[in-house]
Image (cartoon, rainbow, N blue to C red; front, side, top):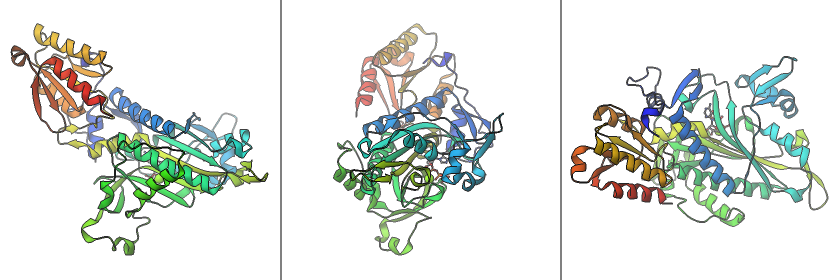
Length: 445
Ligand code: ATP
Ligand code: MG
């Protein structure tokens, strides 16, 4: 993309309404614009990051054997009356009446809708296990929407639902989700810690939330710092292997990690003092096993191997995709702007032409742009007639991990500058080598 042809409405001033850094930088970097309280338009740069996160979620879900689909945002109230949640959900549910006087709602989650799909089409244990998911907009009429996309009213969420014949296989589905979530967050450059949680209005017996540590998080968290040493890395996971999934879950749930809702000071005090940590965290996902809570009232049953008709065992599993954009910025920024992890960056590298209109710098920039594009990468070329300082400030604000700077002075010696956004370190090298380096960086697993 050439910046001269893009739509990147960066703001020079700090927007007064933004209380936390991710909100401030997302507005300043032209990623989002508020449409109304807690509802945002995703401008091109923000949309690109959102799509990247969505893709990672899709890839990791499908790797785990989960099947993508798409359910609507608007739902009929009747299904929610069947589960009993139409009354229970309260004022967070946006209720709508259509022209025929039918009660509708903008879905805050999809347990009822998916259970209805299941009961219409599945009747035998032979069709299980089954996990269906979608990534779709949700609406919760939060009393205090704030912090930009972190606590919106309309937000983008992956929600998945497992259907299993009995408790044990549903617990495997739970474990499989935890493992796939750990991989997902790691690919986004985040460490999200699974913490024992309360089940809230979804209901259920087993649940973990995934929290990213950040000062601006809304939850208070207590953990054993030993958990920070855990990595999924590039280990091979066989998602059909119950023992392997269980072992990974055990590894990640053995060190103490809880939110204020489930915190147990007696257990916490048993951790050696130097590893006992308290901080704030951002909830970026949650998994639940809730058994037959929805299948029983809604009559979602299957015939098991013994020929008995039993309610199906279910769980639901959510990732806050739009909140994650903010969470990543909270976890990765400095005083000049965002620092995107390589796995989610909207563009792989920025190209800054220090003297637009100079035949030499223009040609080198075009060559680098062409070579990176030909290699399947997406460069963002700042080809505007702007001062160098303004170009650098924009690149720093929008946070691309790598910048190639092309100026007449360097070109005299046949070199350009390759700069890491994270460390600020620069290196002079030939344009060809700079391209090769960027290619190598993104070829890493
Ligand atoms: P919270 O406790 O933050 O209100 P929740 O526990 O009600 O969230 P879940 O039902 O677990 O939310 O939804 C799954 C994920 O969706 C959450 O982990 C979070 O990342 C995201 N999410 C929930 N509410 C919002 C919101 N208002 N804005 C943005 N993302 C949200
Ligand atoms: Mg939650």
